[in-house]
Every structure is written in C-alpha cells, then in structure tokens.
Length: 343
Image 1: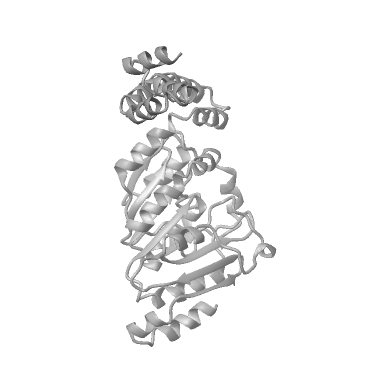
Image 2: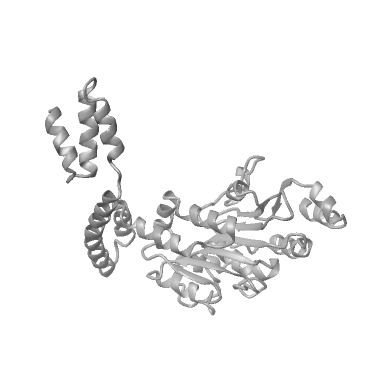
C-alpha cells in the first residue's frame, strides 16, 4: 500500500511544497481489487471511479500499462484520480483489504477539497457505499445497485443477487451511505429493479432515460458516447447540463438501431414489444418532421455560388453540386432553373 505511506509523509509538508511533489502515479493490489492513482494538482478535483460488471479482469491481466475503468477518462480531463478495478466476475468490492485501505486513505486526502465519484451498476454501488467515508461532494451514478442485502432490497431478484450472497451484507459499507454528497443518478424507470434501487438515492437529481435498460442496451448507449459525454461534463464542471442531456437522449430516438436493440433486449416481454412498436411508429413521423425542420435551416447558397462560378469550365461538377443543393432544398426555384439550363 505504497500510496498510504506516500500520503502520510506528503501531508507533513507545507502546501506549496506538496504541489511541487506532484505529479505522482502508481498502483496497488488490494486482495481482489487493483487500485491505480494519478495526482497532478491539489487545486483540482479528486475523482474516484469503481469498475462496473462486465470488466472482469484477472490478476494476470495486470501490467504497467493497465488502466482500470474510468482512469484514462479522468486523465484526459486533467483531474486527480483514484480508480478501483475489481478482479473476477463475482466481486462486489467487499474484500477486507480494500475496506482497510479506504479507511486509512480517507483522512489522508485533506488537501483535496473537491471530491467526485463516478460509477455504473456495480461501480455505482461502491461509489454510494463509500461516499460518506471518502467525503465525496458530487457523484454521478448510472443505474447503480444500492445494496445486495435482500432484506433492504427484496425486489432485486436478479441472479446476480443470489450469487452475491457469498459476501457478508451486514458488515460496514454494505448499503448506500451518501453522507452530504449531491449529484445525479441516471436510470431507466421502466426497469423494475433499477427503479427500486434508484428510489433509495432520494437526495440525488434523478435523470430518466426510457429504454436504457441495465446491461444490453447500456453497452449499446456507450457506443454512441452517451456515458462519456455526460461523464466529461460532470468531471469538468461538477454538474450535468440537464437541457443538453435531455436533447441527447431525444436524439437517440432518431437512430433506427436504437429500436432494433430495444426490441432484442425486450424480446421476452410482449407488452413491452407493443409499446416499443407504437413508440417507433410515432417517432418515424417525428423523425421526418425533424429532418424537414433541419433542412429548412441549411444555407445552400455557398453550393450555388460555387456551381455558378465553375459552370462554364466544369459543367458536370456544377450539376453535381446543384443536385446536392436540390436534395437539401427540394423547393428552391433557382436551383431547379439552373439545373434545367445546364442539362
């Protein structure tokens, strides 16, 4: 636990000298958890990330270049970061070595006055469970699990809940404990289990994405940069632009593959299939209106100017440019007139 020793010595230095000792990077293995850290500036936020399910690395995957989930994103935003990567499939950040490390780490972070937490699903559970211990100020959670304690969340009947019972869900840090942390929780309210967990995060701002699901569709959303864009906004400004967020989720509905993925994820629910079909048909019309509105805002004059400039020397090229302009503005009389002349 090299970081604990380094921080203990670092805290004895005057603040200006503390800054001169940065940057510092390193990593430690804490039982079945790998932690990697990178400190660059005590005046910048310190971000904690915990890995979600599906990032199931093993100890033999670790090397000098290995980065836990969220680590590189934090580096690109030029903030301080401590990232925790679980090893193995069934791992809920319950190892005693990790708990001891966090308890020793928390009081050594006093120079970092702004502390953030970011996690998805299983990682969201860890952020919520350790938020008070680490004195987090703001958190960003995507469809987090609040606990696997069956007495506290009896409606969580996923298979992962039964598997997780190998761990002790009575000892410390088994349930969410946000302390004074504020922030955002993003989830799909049509997912019964996720909705139940989300209700337990009452002090956070709830942002709902219908059809996001929990795993299959969440991976798909990541391909559109959905998670990354929101996370960058949060890390950079410690807040999410809610208006932009809602616009982004609305834009997703115009992607045909969005519905194909949703249908696949909900193949076993006839009721859900009917709802998706109705929504898809409605939004086909909405998409057409959206495209028409967008076309009305396009300025085709530069295309016309270039076509007219080169119509004598390169008439074929001019025709192609005008045909593009006609596709963008089908009712423009000047474009139609010039095309008839050149053809």
